[in-house]
Structure formats: structure tokens, C-alpha cells
Length: 226
Image (tube, rainbow, N blue to C red):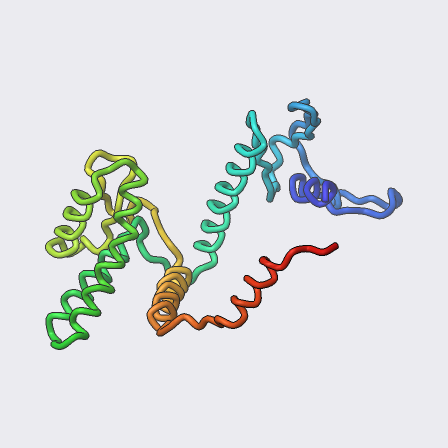
């Protein structure tokens, strides 16, 4: 593993012998340094023009803190990797949920009956995503949602607006702000959540076996003769 990292850092080609070495198998490194960090020693390759790798070192006072930082960093790296590989992206920060919610409410006005109530309930459930983002950022979620609803309903470019956790206004154009989500992941999220809700609604009763429960009670009451 260390040899593979060195190859990716310097651009060299691994050789099984030192005989017949040519310049095309050699790598380039401007500066090499071995540094003691904590109880471990690390090798640093600096100023490598053909480098294809980098290393992130996490340090902290507690193992739990390190594990949480590693999970958060892994999630951030994986979502960026997925976004780069995705064919299409959608604006994040709850922008797509607010836009779908608006479209569903508009569609529900064209139909009647109980389906209108169901569609409106589904549209309201989608707003949980931006509401949660606003709450976690310490913002007034009701105020942020009202701003987003107005922006999506009035402004032509409002469909790109979502929650902004760094500003006082609480909303921003997430597409221009590079807050993106891969389309295929967003589809999977909405599909899985809908299927889970339908499964819960499809449970009509809870099946119990009273005789089996009575046998368990009798075994507990029976004294241990051993």
C-alpha cells in the first residue's frame, strides 16, 4: 500500500530489479521529508509535478472525536466523488424538495377527491428536508421556508434557491453556490422514502400468538428444581 502511494505521488513505475533502469521509469519529487506526528512517523513528498494523490491526517484528543471526523470526511469525499461521476446534478440545500413540493401543490389544484389531500400531504412531507437543514443551522425554519416558498413561486430562477447555513438571510441560489446533489442519488432517496412510507401504511394488523406467550409465562413461573 505504501509503495502504491509513493508511485501515485512521484509518478514513478515500480521495478522488480535495479538492472537496466531507464529515465522513463523514474519519478520526480521536489522535496522529501519525514515528520514525527504524535506516535507515528510520516513521509511527505512535496512539489511532485505528476502527483495523483494526497493524504489527510486527522488529529484529536479523543478516539470518538477522530472516528466522527473520519466519518464526516468520508461522507464529504464520497458525495463529491459521486457528483463528479453523475451524469446530471440538481441544486441542493432543499431546493429540489421545495420545487417538487410547489409543483405537486399546483397539480393537486387540478384534481379533486381524496387524491388531492394525499398529494398535498406528500408535498408537505418534502418540506421536512429544508426545515431540518434550517433547524440544524440554528435558523428560524418557518421564516426560511416562507422565503423559499415565495422565491420558488414568484422568481423565474427561484427553483435553484435552497437553505444557506452561512448567511443571515438563510437562502441562496444553491446552483450558483456549488451546493449540488447527484440526480440518481436524489431519485433513490425519494423512491426509498416513498416505498418505506407505503410499507408502513400497508400494515393492517399486528399478528400475535397468545398460546406461545402463555407458554413462556408458565416457564418463567415454574421453579428451578436443579
